[in-house]
Length: 142
Image (cartoon, rainbow, N blue to C red; front, top):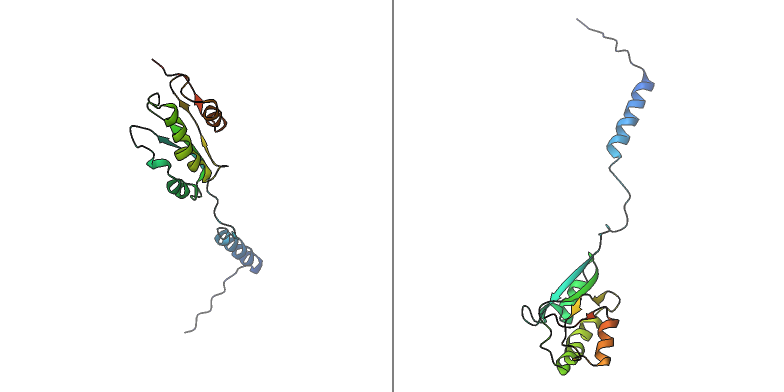
């Protein structure tokens, strides 16, 4: 016995369905030749005479942080007490710690926050340098 069955379909409908199915399946394939962009964010690094000293803002540490693609700007934020520094201590902080830290990437590393030094302890040169690098020098709060 031989069965013959006729299947009725329209060739144009089949071709249309195949094109729609193909474009749906291939819609996820893109030609992305560039690297994925990462939203860069600003970060703040706190430093203190009491808590962490200056380990967080050494030039080597800042180079590692600045090399990350998700970091836009780095702000150095002083916390805790600073009124105990003498004029020589304020100058040494600037010259030996903060200037080398900012020199790592001067366009992206800057200051933020307040230094509550004892009134008159910072000489005019040091005071201007701190202000130019976006820190504020405020009188010690009693």
